[in-house]
Amino acid sequence: MDRIKAMNLVTSYQLGHISRRQFIRRAVVTFGSLSVANMVLAACQAVPITAPQPTLIQTPPAAPEAPEPTAVATEEAAEEAAADDGELITETVTYSDRDGEELTGYLARPADGEPRAAVIVIQEWWGLDEHIQDLTRRFAAEGFVALAPDLYKGQVATEPDEARKLVMELDMAEAVVEIDQGIAFLLAQDYVTGDKAGVVGFCMGGGLALQLAVNSDRVGAAVPFYGNLLSPEEAARVQAPVQAHYGTEDRFDLDALEEMGQIIQEEAGHPSEVYIYEGAPHAFLNDTAASYRPEAAAEAWERTLAWFRQHLS
Image (cartoon, rainbow, N blue to C red; front, side, top):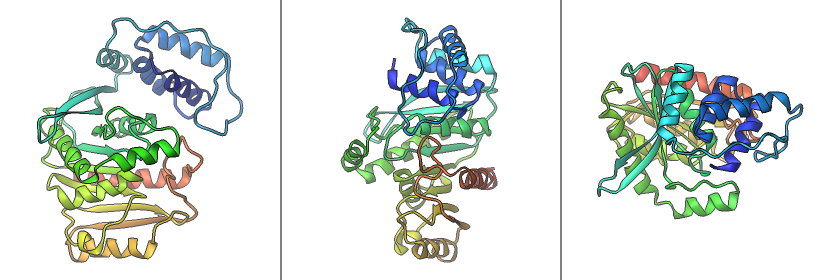
């Protein structure tokens, strides 16, 4: 069991960042047992935290020592959680790259089995962490089949220096190909409808979402959050509608951002929307970080959902 992940989950619930239902669903996957998840929930309610803490990784209050899971597999635990709340199925899936090598991703989908539109969720530079998994579940809860490819192959950073090292080691062109293979995997599933998928990315993933819009004909709509911009030449080759979300307190050239949107619309011939949020810094949608801005995040989230529903239906 990932002890730090368990600690963060407990603290998120006690600080009110997630609901009881969300806690139970994630705790089943983390601890491998619904009964253990309920034990930890009882402990959380018995010893509440009354004030927010300054960092993501915090020391929770004392709680009963939870037994380690035995023979409960991750997929089985996810199925148990879905059966408990009747909403979502979450699992780690495997698929192949163009050379036949195994790739993995975190998938979430509505438990009713009805075919839904597909959305790819592309990680920040930290990796496939709890925040990205949570966003994947949030898209599923809104009626999409969502997949977050694991671009770091199991590695997750908690410090900027670690994240910087992982980014430098990542072949971005190859990452675009791997994400495109994830789209192909999703579109082949009987619980997915349509012949194109949406792509949404954050930070590093925002830039990759834009690159997918240029390089993949499987993309039906793209939504970059505070990612590296396209050059004018790249913007002219975009193959899908693009909706972009950036803050005024970020490092990006907002004039270049506006120009990118115009080129996508006028030269590439695809719908384009650019939203700039006054006072919002980098990573303003990340509710596990000090950069989180609830008002801007809520507005951007609703616009993203509407964009995907418009262009993936």
